[in-house]
Image (cartoon, rainbow, N blue to C red):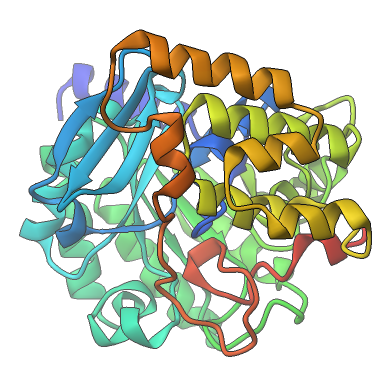
Length: 378
């Protein structure tokens, strides 16, 4: 490795040091939540997992009015992003094949700050496809995918794993991962069979931190519900950085060093961001209902009954804001993806990991990893 290459690697690793990050969350972690998290102070944001074959062959479209970049396939949005997150968004990839993973990565490489291989999803659809947690039991395949990406893309590569019950087995895996040249490693401090109601095993992370080269950043994921948890987690585990899903889903202002702001205020800001980015209405509504703090209030009931952005904005006192955005759409002539009227009717992302209990789908594509955030007590 040349001196220049070593310098590049160190620059990439520095991106993952000393940070507080937004975890990948199915359905919730779409563009509006990522942009709002960055606005509140998140250092990096992970996209929801995208399966490699679903992004390959997609068409990149830019809405010059909103700035939203959409990857479209068969008339559907597979991934959306924005220039405002270009240097901050990590694209999480689901894959079981090195060549397919690389094709997928090259499709979106120009618009993302890094790639992350999902090695933690324990759901049947993922494991049957050889992806997610199945990769942890097939380290040759896992490392082959990482090596292929590391050697062929122009942005840093990381991966996200869980822990094994056997600590030595975990350490053996992370050592092999470190040898692939990844720029960071995220560890969800639960085994694949643990449920979110079970306390994350922070005490198991210290051996991981000590078992990899000093230069490799290790990111903790699991049971981070407040800004104050960040330093506490780092002190206990030695982790380089910390990642949150449930905390951000409940109130994305968790990333503010000065403390969270009122949840209702963040709800309003989330809807503003969703409208500005022309996020699919049903996805916005789903996320909003997870964020809204008072599920017994009349306003919550009213929001649940909405079927358009116009109605939703009316519930939140954003009528004039909506009208101004609508006027921009009808007067711009930039008809295409992400138009506000289309966003009212276009369906949002489908569930990919069904949850028998009907709970929200979030980090690692695990329905229970992120129980309804409104019930989280901080």
